[in-house]
Length: 119
Image (cartoon, rainbow, N blue to C red; front, top):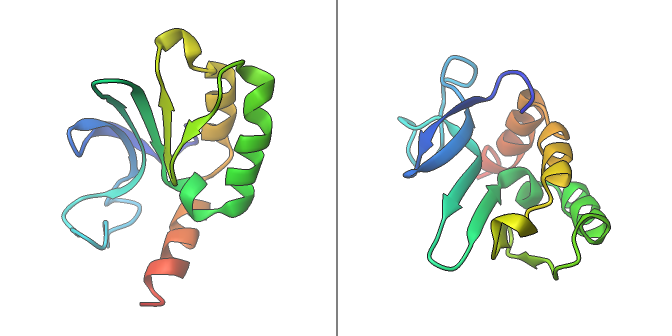
């Protein structure tokens, strides 16, 4: 993860987020929580990666969708921000590493504010 994100438990999942020390406003839905960025969850039928940057930045989403077939023979199972993997062996770790490095804390806060502050 780029410098500035912190790791902890967020929404009962492993989470990476912008701490209050860097973004005191916190998450608009619950300002007591830090601004979420990425979470990992083990669900009944899949291992899920929730990446807010993919949802918020179309160029990042398009890049990920285009790159995925280069790293996996499996069909991409993806929602708006959720990427689902059926088995641990299906996870393209190198691609996830690249995805994590593509957005800085400052860029994420800027994108987040551009959407939330409009409301």
